[in-house]
Each structure stands twice: as C-alpha cells, then as structure tokens.
Length: 79
Image (cartoon, helix red, strand yellow):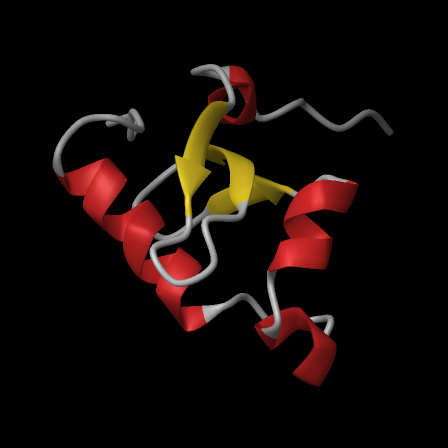
C-alpha cells in the first residue's frame, strides 16, 4: 500500500520569525492555520530560556510572533 504525500506540506518557504521576548530567530512554515512547522537552530535554542523549562513546548512569546506573522502575511498560510 502506498501513501499519497500531502502536497500542502511542501507549499511555501520557511520564513524567519523572531521572538519578541528573547529575539531568537527560527524558520517557520504554515501548512494551515492549525499546523505550524518551526525549525530551530542552535543559536535560537540557546537564546530561548523557555525551552530550558520544557524542551518539547513552544515558547508562548514565539507562538504569538508566529501568529502575528501569519495574520500580517509575513508567513503564508495556504488555503
């Protein structure tokens, strides 16, 4: 059995978004309003103090910055 690849995941480039709290810059892509891919690098992980508390969670300040970027069109959200 083969699985069809979801082409929506390939739409749009990774776009840099900076956290308002710590200025960590990550790369972000949205496949929908509900799904967000965030690519962290070593410098961003080191800058974000929230990740020390819970490495599996996303920083609330960064999550807010991503939402704002999607709303203002800096990060494309496919239909």
